[in-house]
Figure 1 (cartoon, chains in turn orange, blue):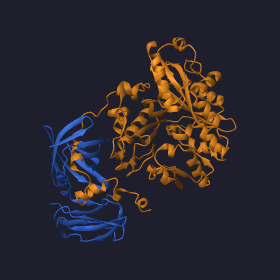
Figure 2: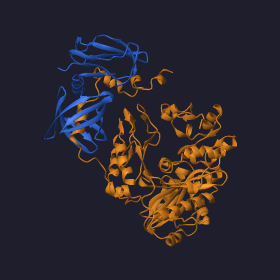
Figure 3: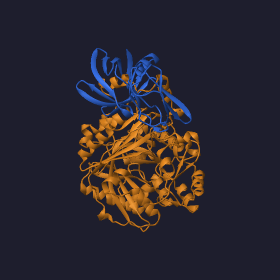
Figure 4: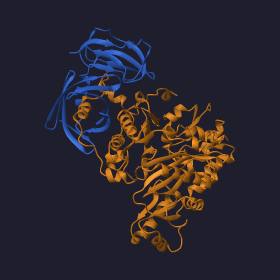
Length: 468
Length: 163
């Protein structure tokens, strides 16, 4: 697109690929997000100092902060995303739910907006099991499942506390709890002329701790008729929110019905699978839309072709409750081949700290059919060499080879149902052979140890940075 | 015996090497195999009629292995300095541990050299790094890089003739 790019980074990210790929990079401070990635002033200053015209917020951090978007616009810069007022109204679960009910988008039966009045009576009307949820929530925080009326009061207190601490807002809503749902979401693109299309759905049911680790498109769990219906519902939702730019409407699906969950007013981590299946570059369109360009295609031009899967490779230990596992990446070889795409946020020689989310890489594959796509993903994962820290790579491969996954018999309970106490099976002898044969040979053992010390200048593979 | 643990699995294992052959004991079971080292830290293994490609890295008592398409994080409890030197010094090939510049070659192909003798000198970030012979022997291969030329980490620097 011939646009020059400026990356911002915190001190610990100075060697991250995004920093090295950008035309310019600006250090915005210490690892603590409040002093860097969440700091409005530092980011705006970096934009001004480099004469930037627009800010792409990515995902996470400030990407769904309406105040930030407003601030960017007020200072005469372009915010690549929807209107600040849309971000704000969609960020409030109670308000967005009201908006969807008005627009005729199916929602989960529950309390009408903010929780007030006789809570016991409201809960009885909805029926148990039900969910207590923070109105401002996200990421599984401020949520409690209540199975009996006796537990309602304590769950409300706990959710309130968590919500106040996480979001600074303890407004709660009550909803029917779906015990075995699939998570299906629809990608939306809207321009500033009011044209809105959907790029079909993503199936994101494979989750741990309410966070996705495997996504695919199309969803293997719904019929074509439902596929079109859910797509149209998403467009309706986006129109109700007066939406422009890229966004995602999330639904829960159970027993033939789907319900609006929330709308994410930003690029999703898993947008790559939609790009592979629809052949549309979503980020490119985000920028074009922000520049005021209208969509040059309509709904009937959007076709799903083949099947795409994404696996998120995390620095975490699936045998210990998915605990984050920081460490130094001593070796990394990415899988290659047709139909394989790696979106990688780290590089060999980089220290993975506990400062941020432990997502290392997104492996995306495309193939003609779901079965062959799963095979290709298993191949790609098996050629992903990453040494120096524990990752979930072996766990992801086990899922690719799981019968229920292959048959697409799953809900958001899949990992709990099938991999509750996951660990390695018996270790084959060749693993111990390679381990005991020792590492690649160097002159003397002393030096070999020195070269593996992350703080030694020898291990700084970029080389040039240390000298400046 | 080394105590090796991977996740919650623990094994008593011992490995003996003679040249490119090895004997591995895991608990009561015995295995034999052959191995060779390739560039880029790759190890080729012939074991139980299979040819396998693996990678490994180590830091202290942690060993990281990729083989059969799986990455393992391994802890060795009795891994001592003595074991380490035994493993490293019986190797025939020496690869560059760093990316940098070739400063000097001290010997020629075919020369017989003594253990500890400096073979090549590298420089990275204004610091010298001397690569020495891991054992007595005859130099069968020496890097073809010119003096002053660039060397990549993991690149073959020299090889000793098999004993």
